[in-house]
Image (cartoon, rainbow, N blue to C red; front, side):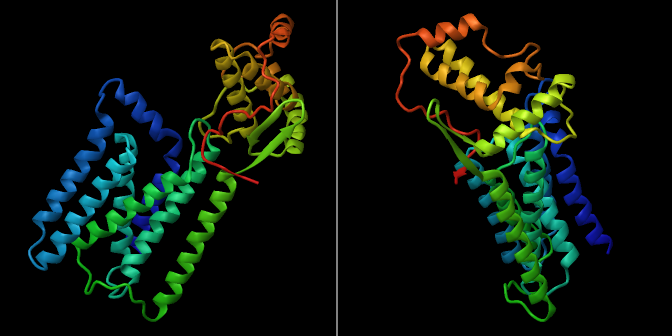
Length: 330
């Protein structure tokens, strides 16, 4: 039970540190620019040296597992172009997989290898889901894939530290039920996460064009009415790290940014249409003071009239910019 408790504690630490870990790396990088690389490379180097020093029997299997773990992680970092901070996932989820492996030990069948991998994936889904609801952070399937690869590397590293009685994926006895339940639970988590984060609506308006939103047009109208009342007395001027992100506000601020960037570049047509999206669907974002701006972002009447009168405005159907992360549209 102690070993299982350590694994659960490690998973909880990974998840609960989501609101602060990125900011901690950012703050420390001002003093120590290579903190991300050091925080990843140093623990891995120490772990590899310790594991190699412990290998006295089953040398071929254990050295092969250690080499494969390093090669898999290194290849993924290079192919996906991970930053040093993103590569830190290999430290977190590698350690988690090792702890779950030790907790499942001394199983002599496939659950010893499968359950640590599933635990890492499930923890990664909950971690990324938590980040998606937390201000400043964002979660997506790409990071869950990274967590899964890091967990796989952790399982291979665990084999080098404590080789199983036999390397097999065959399941026996009660392990079949445990692995099936864990697999079903993990797949359900992934599906629910993908639906929450990566499924969106295409909102169309004959006078504006189309844009992608997490919400339907009717939902955006309801949110606009709700936020107008709330923000009249309590504008969203602060971001609490441990709080629920207002996705409606975030989407509105993205459109404000697109509008302003288009205006600065002289693309008056895009700026005009983005402003129409804001006026119709995100009016409270224009009228409230927010954490992103000390003053409301609604165009003055003179600027709006100037934009409307510009002869260069493209009257063809308008499609707003891409969503901030990959989504699949209903």
